[in-house]
Image (tube, rainbow, N blue to C red; front, side, top):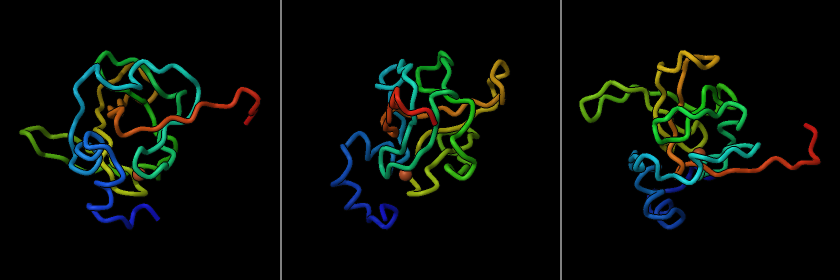
Length: 136
Ligand code: FE
């Protein structure tokens, strides 16, 4: 469905900031994102297509200024690709469903269960709070 959209269609659907980050592989300014301090229980989704990406259970405060997760919702939710832009060797994280850029993953969180830090732009995420009556 959504993954069939053209770049023109994405431009119409997303805000200019979201387009720049999701479709043009940009990065929001640190400490600027709306989900950085979100501590609610729920599911983080792709802001472009709505796919489930990260659980609040896996979110932690990395001190970097971007929402950080030590794991993904499921291993097929994201795609990882080498990213050598800007003179750095990084691993880019993108949405497996629609291909939109989400952020990068670093192996620098030894105090977390996986040792990994998925460093994700707030602008690339939606959030579905868990219903308090939902026991699943
Ligand atoms: Fe997506």
